[in-house]
Length: 269
Image (cartoon, rainbow, N blue to C red; front, side, top):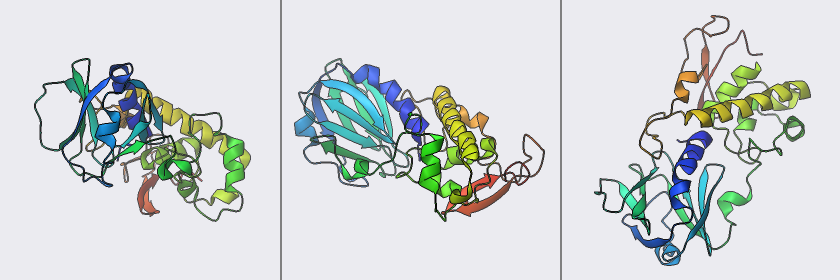
C-alpha cells in the first residue's frame, strides 16, 4: 500500500495541474471501490474551481470553492494527469476533466481505494487521526507521554494512526533501525532520550523518502508513471537474512501486528 511519502509525492505532482483549474465534467465509470464512490461527487464537483490540494495522513483532499473530495489510493490506486483525449485503459475508474485541456484520472486495478465527497472537512476517517509526523506537534515529549503505561510494542505504537499518522510498515522498520530500538520493546519502557532519537529518525526517514519520490514497492508509481527510488536506501525492510550494513550480523525477521518486521539484534536493543 502506498505510504505517506508516496501519497505526498503524488500530491506534489498533481497539485500544480489542478490548483486554479475548473472541473468541467466528472466521469465515474466504476463506483464499486472499497467504499462506494459518493454518488453526489460528479454533480457537486462539476463546474467548481480547485483551490488547493492537501494531504492528511494517506488521504489526498482536493479543496473546491464549495466542499472537497478525498481520495485514498488503497493497495494499487494511482493518479495521472493526462490529455483530455487520452485513451482509456482497463481499471481507469474516474476522470475529472479540467478546463486546461487535461484530466485527472484515477486508476485502481484492485479497487481497494476510495473517493468521498466532503461537504465540509469532517469525515469519520479523518476525525480521530493523530498528528502529522513531520509537524511540530509530533515531538519526543508527545510520543513519550502517549506511550506511558502502554503494554504494546513500540512498532505497534508508531504505526497506530491515532498516535501519529503515516508511519507505515516500511518506514517504521527503517526508523527503528536508525534509532537503535528493537521493534519488540514495550513502548511504555522506552526513555525520553530514546524517543528523541526515534522521532528524529522518523522525521528524517520520511523526509528523505519524500525527496526521493517514494519507495515504489509493487504497484506504486508516481503521478507521471515513473517509480520512486527510496527503495535503494532501505536498510532493513525486505532484507531479512541479509547482513546488517552497520555490523554485518544477519538481519532477523518476525511478525508484529501481522506485519513483516526486520531488525538487527546486535544494533537494536
